[in-house]
Length: 187
Image 1 (cartoon, rainbow, N blue to C red):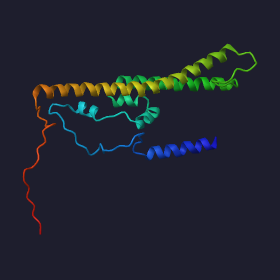
Image 2: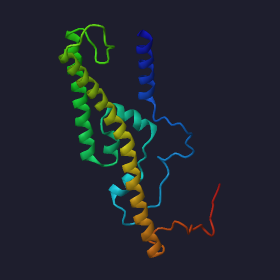
Image 3: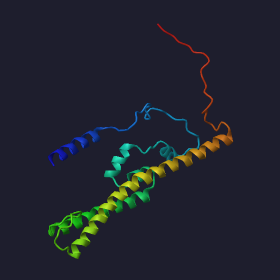
Image 4: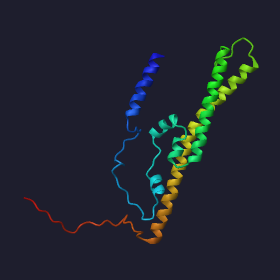
């Protein structure tokens, strides 16, 4: 138990100080790169395009229920997930408290003694609550990532189609302008 607490402490302390962790190596720094933006792009659309669901967001979603949906600007779904996770935690705590009084645990192995229907009910409540906590986490991570990517695709399609229809579209994505001469002065 002491080793587990120590390992958790070390992992959390490293994770909290880390800027981000990825499985793959990042070649460019996305904080410095300035993308070409279409002139009628709204701030919401630009914010959605610049967001990615990364591994660090998966860790944040463990702690903050609905984090990925909030990042994808799906606030109602984020609040539903927050409510579901709180209900799951409350149900787990309630069943743990009730079962502890009777010397049982939520996932305890059935003993040879006959089980009281009340204990069985509390075990079902506890198991369902734990399942609800895990379901809301995985739903937040997987569905939130899908929603974010779908919104990004819609925005890219919208402005990609505009660029095709209007020709240049006010943004020179393909035509680069380079200076034809330069002046330098040195002492």
